[in-house]
Length: 335
Image (cartoon, rainbow, N blue to C red; front, side, top):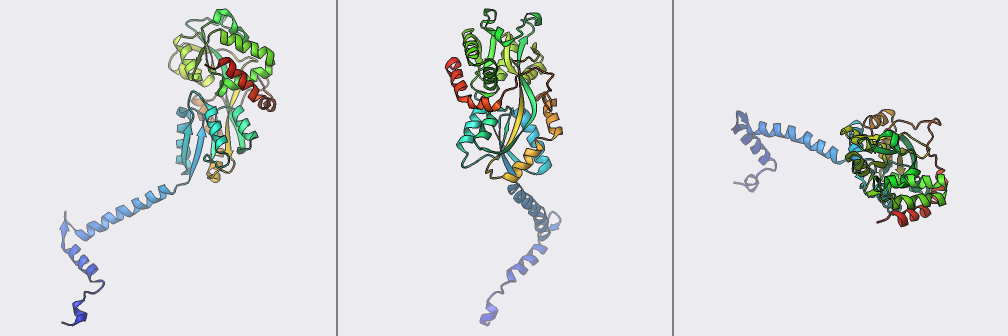
């Protein structure tokens, strides 16, 4: 036999495989046919998996409660094909934790979009150049709430100034006013009343032994259970307790109440700027805001007009005095 004939041809293995695969049967089909079918199923699956790995994404920091934000972000993913990676805040420190994170990451942004459920800290970050742009969307409100089993509406306080009366000693619940909407509300009251009157009220309120708790939802829950008679909290937390059938009622808005819009901001230098813009526009759609209102995360699409007498802060002045006001709150209310 010649040396040439003794060497197998380069493609002989493939021909042998075809002959062998056609001659072997499994379950009524040639092995070669089984392999072809499996390849036909596997290749599209691998292609889809590769597509999924390369889906565009957007990173969100949000202080909107996860129970409300998550369904909205899932619908966004379904409608746009953009994967939303969300980092939520904690109930105890609320927005302040995310604010500090955004400030720390300013020169190397890890977040693309900030969805905040209040306004002051968004304005603070915007003033420090953290955002490319931001917008206010929908609104909630800060309210006094009462347990209707323990307190009649006729006997309920009509003003925050009444909460320093001995009648309410040990019967008031509020979140620590160093964080979130409680801090914003207290700082807006400082501007409204003036520092001297405000400091006196804060000290008298602290001396009246209120329940100081980790978050507005906890304050609302204490009122719902009757452990506190009166609570300073947010409208969505009151609504959440009402859905459970609790005897809790929000008192009417007054000139000491604060309206709180949601805010949405695109981070300057965002790594996924294009998808951040898509989500920025999506969260402002009227149908999205209506869904949040239907879930009672918001009270409506736009704050009521001049007919409602509520606090209307000068935000620029509020930011200027932010550090001084925050320091006073720490001295008065911190554990």
